[in-house]
Length: 264
Ligand SMILES: [Zn+2]
Image (cartoon, rainbow, N blue to C red; front, side, top):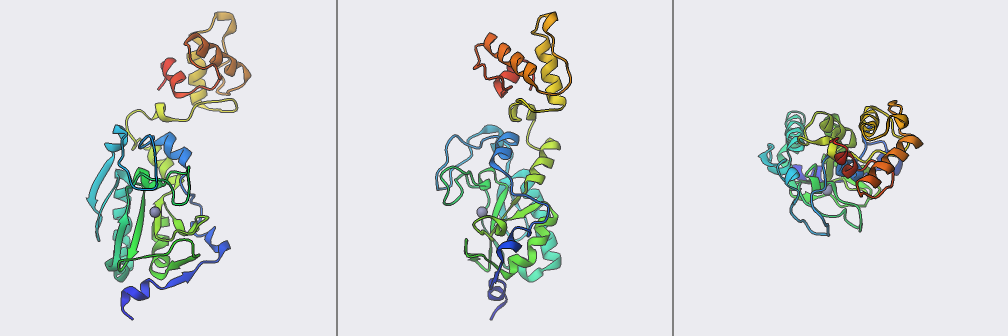
């Protein structure tokens, strides 16, 4: 048996183990990716299609990450290079066998008609060992992938072996890492425009800014308390403002509403 075939031996993953494989990390949700990075393109199918959104296009790079070149979102490619350097140091035989089956690819999750794959944002990568792909959905993972997944986790990458349909070849930037990159301003210049709409129950500084902006359009007797809590009065004020601007008066401060208020 050569080294590569030893590394590709499938190791069983018990169902209950799979859910704890990534420790505190979570898979990045579509809602988060769309809200914080944007939508790479208007439609998705089962085959790879190119990024259309110019802001996201501007974040895509192709760089040498060690054992291969990778095309993906700039911060993801940078972290991947660090991960691969750690693998080279700790597991040189695995590093030598590693290949890529693709990073950036705008498509749906395999088998889904609605879920967008995180490959669409170039924050996920599929790995091969000795040119061999791990088989998806069999609840087993190649031994080499099993050995290196803690290194991915340490750098904030989530391992697809924990997906509902096991996908051990797949590693992606976790929900937590996407949040951090967003807070660090790595997704471009105007993140406020891209946040999800504010609605009843939301709290915080964004709601305070909204209330202050609405007050500039309200008569002195109807001013909102600027308390950062989106309650019924704020909803009514948003709906009134939307009506005055010809926007659908749903009382949710959508991107368009925020923009009309001069926010974002
Ligand atoms: Zn994948």
